[in-house]
Image 1 (cartoon, rainbow, N blue to C red):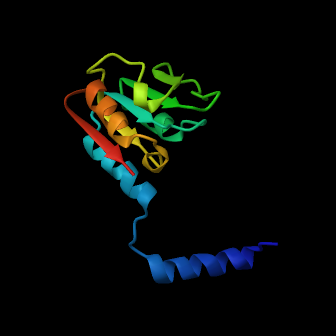
Image 2: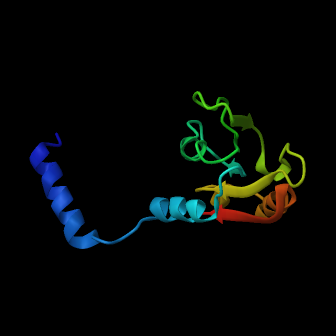
Image 3: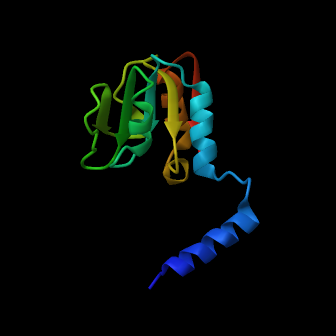
Length: 133
């Protein structure tokens, strides 16, 4: 059983060895925030069932769309947050629809990454950004 004392020891070790370090999730979110402007449209490619990053971006973006193979996607109560069940190699969106495409822990699962990246390019507006971990 994990006790409060165990937790303190873990926190002390973390502070000793990792103070000042930023891990991939923090770097990912910082990169998104550097590029996202109010009123932009975001596509989260491989958003996951709970659409956690989508929900974080919803207060800033004009529209956030998450797409995943999950059978159900939970969008919460955001009016401009949409969950779509679909495949990344054939995105069901019109061309030049999004300002930013983001994707976390997805690329390593793709059968044809080139095809997916071409789809990202197709749905991005001119000057759009892609942020991938």
